[in-house]
Amino acid sequence: MLIRSMMGAAALSLAACTTAPPAASSLTPSPASSLTPSLTPSVAPQDGASTVSAAAPGRPVKVMIVTMFAPEGQAWLDRLGPWQAVAVPGLSPDYPAVRCNLQDVCVVTTGMGYANAAASTMALTFSTQFDLRRTYFLISGIAGVDPAQGTLGSAAWATYLVDFGLQWELDARERPAGWPTGYLGINTKRPADKPPLDYRTEVFRLNAQLADAAYALSRDVALADSAQAQAARAKFDYAPANRPPAVIRCDTLSGNTWFSGTRLGERARQWMKLLTDGQGTYCMTAQEDNATFEALKRAASVRRVDLARVAVLRTGSDFDRPHRGQTSADNLLNYAAQGGFAPATENLYRAGNPLVQEIVTHWDAWRDGVPPR
Image 1 (cartoon, one colour):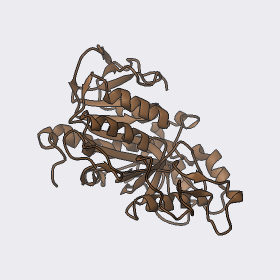
Image 2 (cartoon, one colour; image 1 turned 180 degrees about the horizontal axis):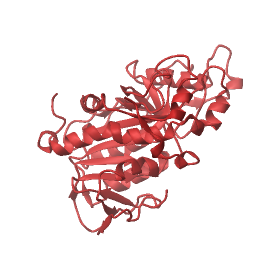
Image 3 (tube, rainbow, N blue to C red; image 1 turned 60 degrees about the vertical axis):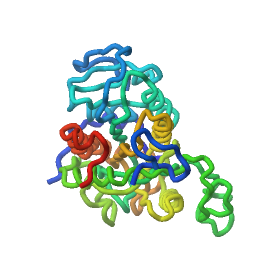
């Protein structure tokens, strides 16, 4: 699923950017959350970060920013310091510490993919170093973007998280006549059938009130762009693919497989609609979100976190399908040439920081839950 590794793309510099003038729940039965009903390289101390003993218990956290690999985390670490590095047993060996600042904002990097995201999130939420019962979690990462919904650099606040990997698959060359795809839901008969949600992780609904607040706070921010991304956009003959990046509301698919293609992209749109009963709109494809949320849900089941305080922000680093005249293989193999990596990582901060600052600046209003707007 189109979510970026660091190869090649990480070498792109953020300096290339220019500025363009209900409670959370699984849609299957889930336990109540704690406070409201539920729906690179090492992070060893650097950049002036001091170290705090792992034995220091119960540090309260107002906002925990969850990133998946170093450039996503660096977008935040470059701005909001100074930081203390708190080593947490069980985190990724590449990113063994959580960084926290004086405003009780912390940044964790889980490592990429389902296994890393779930394991690191469980280690974090079941550690004794932090009190996370009133913490707002901002999952902040780059993604592939559907050109019918957004473009390179666009920032999307999600309501639904859908697992794209939990499907049966036939080789597309061997699919039955009349089937548009080789994918179908597990224990179904046709691609258009909604599957039974037996895994209980297939689809999650986030707190729409929090997503609405995040969108309202960020919708007018000036997002970063790059000349390379502008050139890539111009190859599309429809909007919003060929328009400047914007803050949008639409939803995220996740799974470990990184895909590219018009037919796979069409399946992604259909799958989102199937699993959300027509309510969700697919726009971002990433590798971790359902795994991260399920780990948070396990922590919520024993009152360690509050699922109503989870927001997901994904920014478009490359298109999930080719433009007219381009092959799917070229779109995949040359994804870094689209130029979306630098503005996407920068826009994690630009679109996400208004929510972070609103929470920490007006903590009295946010302490007991998302305030009415």
